[in-house]
Image 1 (spheres, rainbow, N blue to C red):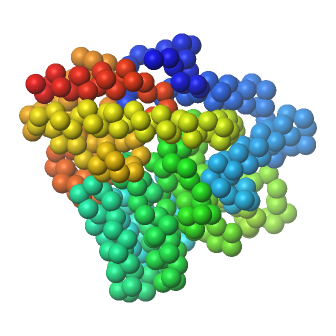
Image 2 (image 1 turned 135 degrees about the vertical axis):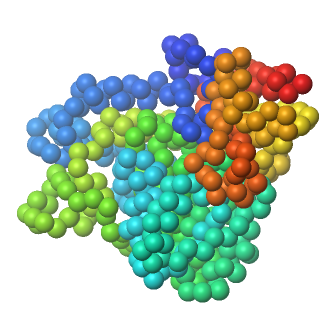
Image 3 (image 1 turned 90 degrees about the vertical axis):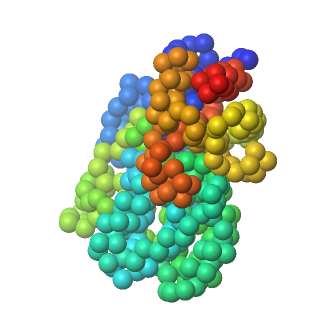
Length: 394
């Protein structure tokens, strides 16, 4: 099978069969790499911090990247999209910037530590956190969420869009209806969904949506996005220079997106993410179809292996291309080690920064092995992975 467009082609050395796309996408499309290098070599000035040619070029680069990301996510006004260091910062900003002591939140049991740990700190400060349990596939039942929201006054419903453990896609549009009908916000962790799904934030009617740039969006590490719907203002986490508004002295400028982008921006990362967004706007539908085809082949190939339990929705149900598994013969860490050393297959074992999710599916004590298909995965990669596990567990 030939290399897919934008996968790096023969110019990218592949030292392994990479099936850890749930952690980060790799290899990056050459257009993303080129954009990062160009930003560092020809637009090295600080954007918005000068009126000379290079600074203006850097500012234009950031502007165009923001517009591309907003278009990809269905956001009409790019000012509603703030660049941050990653989804963890975005989650902290939307939680700590919108919740206060005395608030109550309803949250799914599948959340990543980027949600659960900030919520723990907020709970210590007086925010009430009520967890609604997902089913064994990691999928939330909207009726369970509705009952929890109606039980007491609720400030926010908090839910991931897709699971980094089972790949389950949550009913976000239904949750938006439930939240808004009960006077609550819907705050979403979209780290595993953006890029792997066609995400339209206006159609989903979310209030805040946190995005990782380096996973399904195919961008570099160290950059992400936070969308806040028009009229919803979060208290910023950081105060500092924004390149403008300095006459206000101590006060942080309140305009978007500058309010949430204090300090020198990660211009190379933003450039790479902008390039990735443009690629996905052009090729995303085709690439997502390829991912799903290969992922179904992987899941269907793994399920019949004796002694193997594969978690997540059934093969004919919608999901992002991520699954976890356990064996009744070999522990998860050993499987991952042997796949790497014997077959050159990169997967991740453990709890995947999501102990809540592993408690939900029953693997908190054992951990599990995670396989993630992404852009650049080939049919041969999938076939080798199925063969390797069949041999290991024979």
